[in-house]
Length: 475
Image (cartoon, rainbow, N blue to C red; front, side):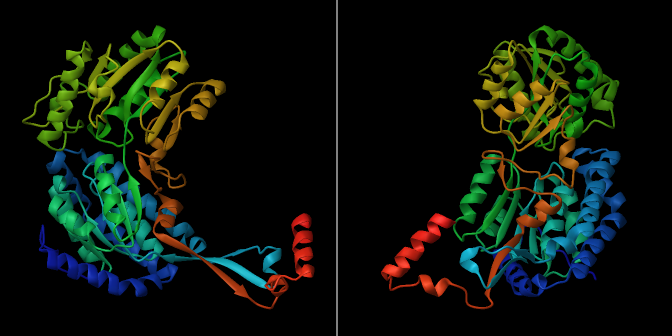
């Protein structure tokens, strides 16, 4: 099936008409069998695969994303998510019988999963295909219809996403609406049943406020400053390699990228040497000429990162690697900072770029206090071979998720929930957890034959009062 793509920044009437079609379709979509929902997931991936080369070309043009990373972090992730959902969807959809208590003698109880209705998915630009389709997969698995708002900053990819959706689905099942802030604002004024937003905490608050007007449930995948805490390791080389990869992948434009590193004061020099070497090994030669090294998505984002570095160095920080930003080409080199003032903006604002502050610590308590003085991070990374060290960090610091002796990789799991806490988000996605976000679990109670409930109804005679007293003592 092929349908026309909606124009970019359509008139309000077009958006409202599209929403009305999705709403009218929602009851039918809710009734789809597991087989029918899986067929829609297959149709989505078939079209993604057909447009594989187009997606690579679009993301290169949008922000020079290497084709290998399109395969690994966009297409593979979508394929893996669909595979995981297909494997378990029938099980997830089955009603679940629940036990009944003494007060419910003669009854049966069960929970029946059902789609929430019409979902709005607002996605960011850093993974412009994956972060559209991963929540869409969950919405389709749950039996929802969906309206999608991709980021305008990656316009070529957004257009491809719209074309893929227009071929894979009927327009009353899934619709893509492209546009900027004004378009998104109008969409948020519509009475969706669930909103799934991925982006910054500041915009997340706007989304939550809009959702409260209807009201509707929300999933907010936000961000924050994800710390790395390193123990006194025998060798810093392996740690540095993993941190360097996580920091420089996607040019640091990842919501769970390491935002700053705590390293024992007596090992700071070792770690600095190791991290610089690993960054050079991953992107040899001039990073600006390396085809594997990505660009920042837009000049104003590159300028924001440059100002964070300038503020840090003005306060006495040492730039031991990188630092020279080219705003015209949106190029920010791999950058390592040491000797950072605790009040520097780079330790307050999410960096979302390839800049790594390194902070020495004298005691673990010092590092824990620093993290806990800030909003709850989306991810926490701990490197240690000592169980007591790891347990101490995990028991004292809250976070959305954790990776031990690695970074970022936990996000790729279809079996773990991915989401934040407080400032870093609400709700979870991926696999079963994504399905649950778009699903209402309706409790059903059936009285099959009368129990003893009538004996406890008014009028409360002395005999009934005595019976209630005995029941309370016995239970």
